Amino acid sequence: MSKERPPQTSILLYQTEDGRTRIQCRFEDETIWLTQALLAELFQVTVPTVNEHLKGIYTEAELAPEATIRKFRIVRSEGARQVTREVEHYSLPAILAVGYRVRSHRGTQFRQWATARLNEYLVKGFTMDDERLKNPLGKGQTDYFDELLERIRDIRSSERRFYQKVLDIYATSVDYQPNTDLSQQFFATVQNKMHWATHGHTAAEVIHQRVDAAKPHMGLTTTRPGGIVRRDDVSVAKNYLTEDELHALNRIVNAYLEFAELQALNRRPMTMRDWITKLDEFLRLSGRELLDHAGAISAESAKAKAEQEYDRYRALMDAQPRPVDADFEQAAKQIQKVPRSAKLKNKKP
Image (cartoon, rainbow, N blue to C red):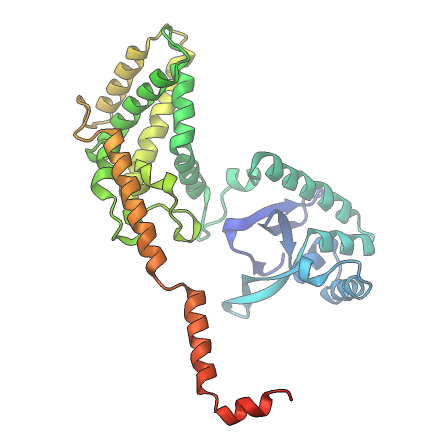
């Protein structure tokens, strides 16, 4: 097996039908990437042979290098040392083109496997290496299964997904009415009990206490990629929680959903009030404090303050010089430093 190892957070394990070869494939940007060494191992040829075929593919313009080659950092063994290097990787079209040229049966096998993985990703939004997750790596190597579980918990406790699951449970109530106001009221009650059990505040109280235009990201601890904050984000209580609070809330939410789904399987008639009682029983059993009042801050007040702070935050951000403004100012200063005689010399007659 190749001594090259890509970062384990982005790999899929491919095993040939005969079980003799296992290839760690990098999965990124909706495609699969392999180094020349891994291509040679996959197709049972030498690295120079792979290199020769790739040169032919690009010389004949069968594929464009800029679209199918990318450098990634990998860990590789060099003697007794483990070093990190940037190595060229080749995307699936290049992999399949090499497989066609070496006329390898393994190329067909790999194409079928890769196509299945990519289809799963495009349809479901994820692809999983089931065998690798079922069979952890050896001692001393990182097992990312726990990280995967934590990410699933975080997704499941997102307000939109949690709201939908709570409404699914609510819909099993004998007094269920498809009324938006009632549904939102039920969700708000459940959500506030979850937040109170986690950190001793309702969702509205968290927002009202922690939102601050003068703080980095307005006090939000969870933002969009790049630290971007949108108006919709500032009214979500979960976005203000500390890491420890977030872990606790995720586990409470997920445990309750499992508990509630198990209760639903009993097919015992339940009213909306019964579901709230079951939630209290669940939280009490978990040793958590119960919320028995409406809280000191209304949802409307919290939302109004959050949006007011957002407007202040946007004004502060807009008043700051942008990188492009700084670049323009620097370029203008450089132009001013050029002697007048040099400017006249370069001026066309």
